[in-house]
Image (cartoon, rainbow, N blue to C red):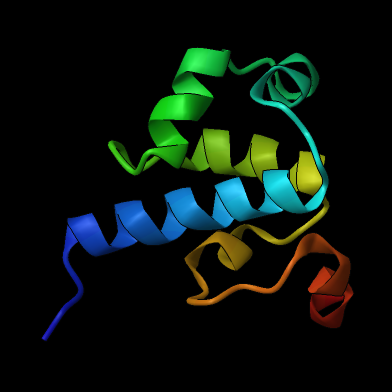
Length: 85
């Protein structure tokens, strides 16, 4: 059975939020460095939307993780992302 959109919203939102927390950043810190608004980041982290590929690329560049990192269940903190290199 295919995973639902709700599953992916929750997975991506929680992984993005976990990265931010692991780096002790505020939504504003991320917004300033990605050109995304704090309100949009909040909506993503609250799992209310599944962000576009363009948004995921901005976030992956900022956090220095591959885009697919956001879709991995139980992702590890950003420091362990070098295992994807």
